[in-house]
Length: 204
Length: 194
Image (cartoon, rainbow over all chains, first blue to last red; front, side):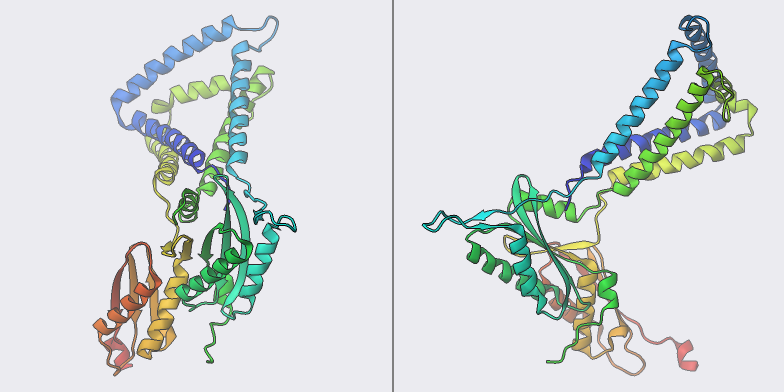
């Protein structure tokens, strides 16, 4: 999971969508609806004379350039920069965290469990199960709480309940071992890898 | 799935982030703005326009209803309107991904629909003895469709398959209840004649 700002995504989409929709609607209206045609023409002429005046009054001495034109270009540049900034913030980075499970301070010191230990432990335990093709374990920071994510791609035709119960037990054991029950979420995936691999062989 | 953090994870895992649509929309808008900005800059610097200078462009826009053939302008307007409609739809629609949430005590479990479908098909193969390739299972948000092709002369009760499928789905403990629909496809008469 990453921390993509999904609300911003939706808002941007809505604004840009409405913009395009409005553009198209105006185009259709001025062709198909006489009243809109007239309004378009009078408004267009009015705006044209206003623009001419504005350009004339903001003209920079001795040249063709006008302050209005420069302001328009500047405004466009600002909007483009804002859009690109929004885009880079939309493409969220993964919110990785260092999982630190510190058991109680004991005479020997403090026990710290890092993400890689948890990841290795869970992956090793899952490795001997034939129906699991790949397993990834990561820890993410969500609302300032570490959340463990176990992503498993099983072979096709694997019973999801059996697998989930197995991983669930595994996480229970890990919690007992490390003395801390981290929030965990398990996801089972399918995909090309699962489709290309052999179905689970049931020899027993 | 008790903590707010896990609820947030499940919500995000089961819904589309719309990143691709946003990229397309923003890039389209940036390209259009960049072009307008470029034309204005060129005219400010008294250089020849790339396609149409700002003054000529404005005049073309004002004269649009009379100067250009109506069909062409309407066709040209329908395209951005449709693109806009798609973006608005993408912004408003929930964008649920093909995944199901499974009950698992205080942990959250999200499973791709494909995993459930293939597991159910495998189970039905074991229950009915019909070859795996003759059972097709489709899993949606609210319904599960099972299609069985038992082949000629093999008796198969629809209700039996339905019961087996429902019993198996119940063991998965999906968070959202689904309706099971079973279809038995008998070989058509045409195939019999062949």
